[in-house]
Image (cartoon, rainbow, N blue to C red; front, side, top):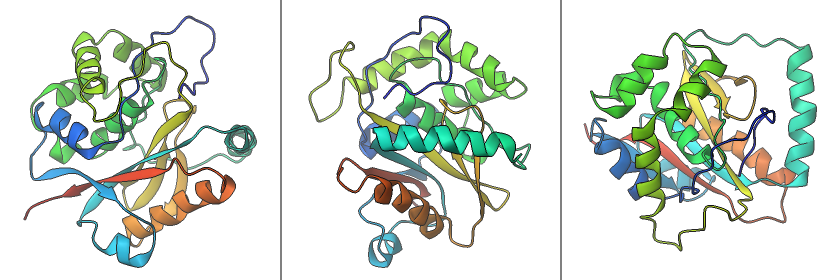
Length: 235
């Protein structure tokens, strides 16, 4: 889904990524990320399902329907957050999404950039090193010019198990990322002008599951929800 606060210029458009840990792991492990870390499916938000998610887990990518109810919630939430200034850690990295249908890649970048200890020496580390001191807006501009990232995204989007959509097809679902930084949970969405602070966490996976459940409760008639965690796979 193309959710962005920037509507002033014609944007680039990519093919949507499939919500598939196998695809994401191939992307990250082929570009320098430590293979001891990877993405795994979260099969439910009850205690039994969450118990099998490997720990530590440091990020969760959430896919949900971009519905009118969400659009209404987001507009009101951004008004609330704008009038009630949040305290955001300086260690949180937030990228602006200016490319249509790139929300899957944005969620991946947010998951990795806020866990820099696992980034290795490949493409993602080069991106994070280049953008570390940039503003939110400048990071978005940088990604537009990163041809290596565009190629990786295209190849990965065309390698999924489901039918590859046409680049012009409308996309109604949207990816966001939840990360733990300095003991706090942040929601990162390249289409929102700032991170969303969700408070301290005791158990990142369980606490984030409660947040994701509020998205489902907001739109209970939809069933296109999925979540995958970035976790340590081996000791």
